[in-house]
Length: 254
Image 1 (cartoon, helix red, strand yellow):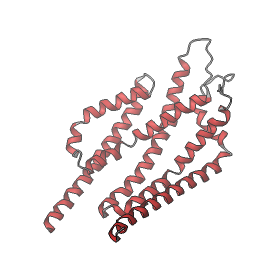
Image 2: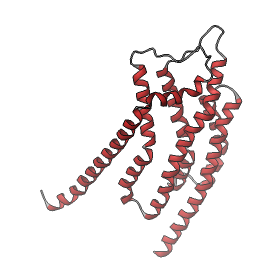
Image 3: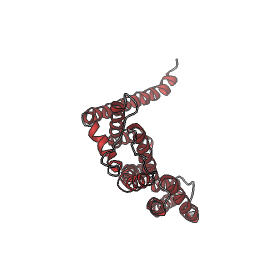
Image 4: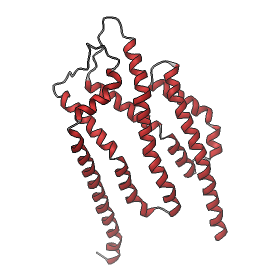
């Protein structure tokens, strides 16, 4: 094998080793958080089930239809919470891996976007827990036929709330997606502003899908999503102007 081939392969091997090491760090930190939280697994599930429990009759409660559900369901939730709490560390490891290949101005943009994406995802989950869940569970438990006892299976309840947590967390990433599309040149601020009517309709359609069929809860989801879109357009204009200014400076320096 020639010397040039070794020079070309060595960086790739080094990148793979670095990637492996960072993945191992991520696994270890998630495992450490999980082990620290596992003792409180049942308490974490009780806290997660609180929005539904307060609407259930005093004589009713949640049930486990599978033999292993009382153990596996809190286990699954605790693992999810561990990954969620480790998200800043995970993103830091991803950032440390890709940062050497970025330009200086890209690094300046990426850091606030990474921090904002974490906070927005957490914010979306908090919005779902404190605002959406009470509306959904209050509606569902109030429309059941008389004589039907509401006794939700713990594993199905967890699957339901995890989907909503993820959906609202992703929905709150709208500003980040908007800024990235503008920065990548996929669309301009003026171009995306012209699509505002479609975005507003899409927000209400998504609100209709994710919430009970009443105008109040749909609005409580659609309006924040629309405001987040407007925030993305606002900051996207700042990024767009800075990108254009940098391009002009580069052209003048040639």
